[in-house]
Length: 576
Image (cartoon, rainbow, N blue to C red):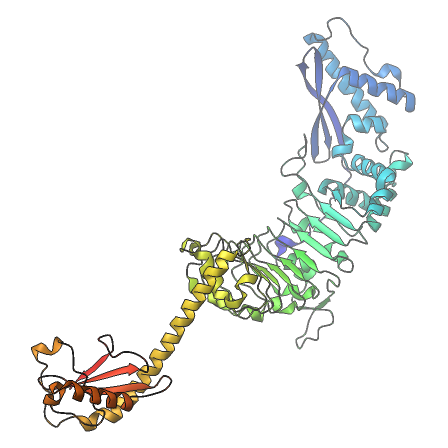
């Protein structure tokens, strides 16, 4: 059990609030007082000039009947003198402390705003959010827009719900917590975003604040963009019945902690509706409506079995993680779009067994140098292989026969430096070259013309290779059958020095004529040549074997295809 991922409990103690004026500074021609406010473990700084104190006091005396004499009086002459500033600093600190004692729970709105409770303190934050939703909540819900909340706001709402306190602390109905709960019950699109480091002038780190999402009853989409450990996000499993799209970034090292947050409590579990041959300790409900899961920009090192809990997922984004292999995706029968870019993948052997029906696949930014595992992704329409280690043109043949592939990105690979790279790649797609968009650029007519030439050259080469193979096979058969009977029992005669001269054309397929017959007359030579041509006639890829006398003795064996000229380029097989 990974205890590091267990949910973080909320603090239950009631925080103590303190205020003190710790100093002052001269800004232009007036003095600004520096105020430290403490609420439990949270602390922040507020700066105000005396006129701000005066405005606050006027509001409080009008609304709450605060003693008008409580605030130290104005001073016109010598207002910035050191002695006056130090004395006033102590008097203003006493003034603020008296106000907090007078309003320990229901803090008046003017005082809340003056001490920035609406930015940093639980009750002030929830009151400000409630008032905002009182005025604009219904409009936001009707518009169906994404609503953004900060972890600090969610933390404050969660904390206030756990406390046995009235839902309205200051007596103003517009700030009642009920406005928030009504809004969260009906909200469909939520984004949780915050800041790295301290919030404003406080010591509050939003990334370490737990909050509970169980107040959201109708969410269709949630996106978490702040760098926040998943263990601080409570109640995520309560969204299983409604959520359609989920995006979790910079929050987790495993898919299990997001999809099965309660999985750490059980040694064996299975998704609901699945019959298991092994005993299980828990049956986990599935994410019944989830079709899009974006867990990019995390530290995920493996695709674990928790994916079985989202059987309807069509779009899966696991880019910018630490994956070195692709497993368990065969459980996602509806998967269509997969992004595995910028991981640590080096090969994808037999990818079709796990990604059989996908249409778009991004593998950019990995360390792939082979494509043998992609040959059977027959549904693939778009493939991004940019920023990999592909160097051999032969690897493209593995995807050249994919029947639906229309978009291919090979940019920023070593293969791109090959001369005429585009046309050589497009030629691998044969008759479909015109349908392929390579590196986000449509194929031009000029490139198609070049592709046709390359295809013709390739076909000619293949035909020549087949012919050569057939020739060798026939040569071997006929020579073994025809040559031995013609061999004399004596040792072969050495080739004379003059043998480099052109050979006579007197040949006979059945017997060897004496050397004199070769040089006798032109008519004799002509008749012999005609007989030779008749004896050597053949069709198709058959081979003509001719035995010719050479001056000075000896016999040469020539092999040629029908229609070829028996010149010096024809193979000299043997010297007898």
